Image (cartoon, rainbow, N blue to C red; front, side, top):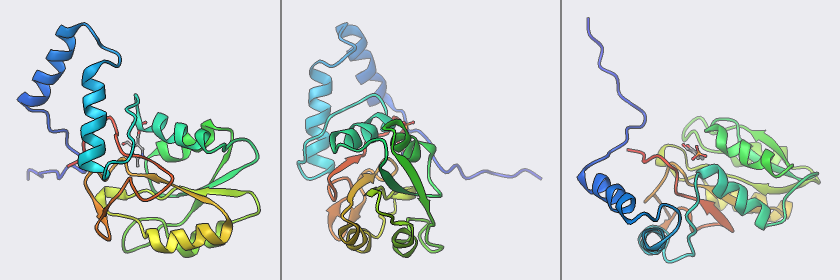
Length: 186
Ligand SMILES: Cc1ncc(COP(=O)(O)O)c(C=O)c1O
């Protein structure tokens, strides 16, 4: 019996993408340059309601930069979901801070605000919800937990380009967000 697999993620690479890569290669400018500036502007306007976007080499780098820009480092704790891609916790560990794992909700697979509240300590400075599989996390409830803890929210939107939460694009809901993963999700 043959079994057909349903891939959880499948890159879509068409002629437009091939031509864009070719254009950059031919230009000889393979770091920064006008293509990157255009991409940042288009991504900002079309995906995150005009918020400032900076293109970096990976989602991990984006998360890491957001955290260090907020002054997070050794001795701090950032709460992350126990079910996500490794980049989420890695970006916290790279700062010297400790990633603290909280449970996910059975219904959405996203960070459970009750579990997050239980994981808060006096060292908690951040909460990093992941909008897993394109499904937005419960940002209102997580925002309340963050406010009570005096912590900041850092969105991991690497799997959720174009998703919205209460009519607002994910990646525009917190202090900083990583939206541009190196892979495109279907
Ligand atoms: C949830 C999540 N966060 C972050 C990333 C970014 O990972 P990378 O550093 O490999 O681009 C990914 C990539 O798939 C992801 O799925």
